[in-house]
Amino acid sequence: MKDYDNALHMMEVQGGSFVKALANCYYMADTPNKTKLRETFAEYFNNYEARFAALTGERKPRFENVYCSACGCEFGPGDHGFSHCEHHANLKGER
Ligand SMILES: [Zn+2]
Image 1 (tube, protein in one colour):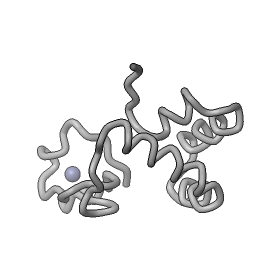
Image 2 (image 1 turned 180 degrees about the horizontal axis):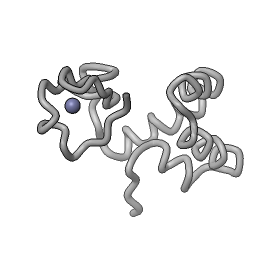
Image 3 (image 1 turned 60 degrees about the vertical axis):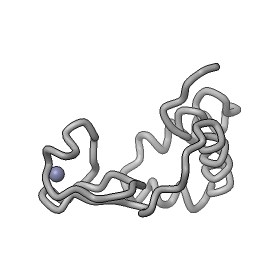
């Protein structure tokens, strides 16, 4: 069985040509455009996120988005935020 990093990765690998393009587009987008893409094509994102969650048996994280209070980066869904940058040294955040 193939392993996927996340729902977007699944979209790239399993999706049809439109879904593949959408995933690529999402990678290129900045935060406001990501929000637009997500809202406009919510059914695709939700569909692949559900598939990915089913695949990994992942439970829903407590927060939709977690932050680092030191640098202000956001890390997407998670159970807790970070108070020091050392705690997210292996994660790539977004400002
Ligand atoms: Zn930080």
